[in-house]
Image (cartoon, rainbow, N blue to C red):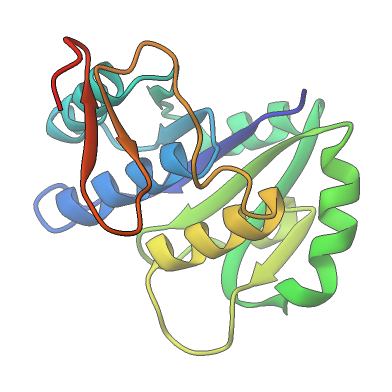
Length: 180
C-alpha cells in the first residue's frame, strides 16, 4: 500500500518548536508514515518519539540536509505535493491525487517560512487549502483528511500504551495495564 511522507522545509529553532511538533503529530495522527525535517532539532525529535512510544505506531522522524536531492529521489517512486496558498484548488485536484495515490507514494511538502522557487518547480502539484492565511498544521490536516477520506481519524496503532475509545458521554482511556 502506498505511503505518505511529510517534508517540513525550514524550522527556526527557538520560534518553531511547538508548531513543528504539531506538524509532526498531525502528520502521524492523520496517516503519514514519516516526517522529514531539514533542520536538526533534538527537542522536537524527542517529543515525536515519546508520542510514538506512548501512543503506538511506526511513525518515523528523519532529518535530511539536502532537501532538493530528497525530493528528486522521491519523485522516482511517487508524487510530490506542495501545500501552498498559491496553488490549485484542493477540491478540484483531490480526486486526481487520490487516484494516483493508489499506485504511488506521496511526499507532502510544507514550509516553515518562505519556500524557495525550486519547490514549486519540483512539485508535481502545488495545492492550496483555501485562499486565506492559515497555519501549515491546518493545511496538512485538511489535506490528509481529504486524501484518506476520514479513514485515519480513528486508527488503531500497534504497540500503543494508551488508547482513547470514542464515546458520546464519557471519557474512555485504555492503558497498557488495562486500567481505565
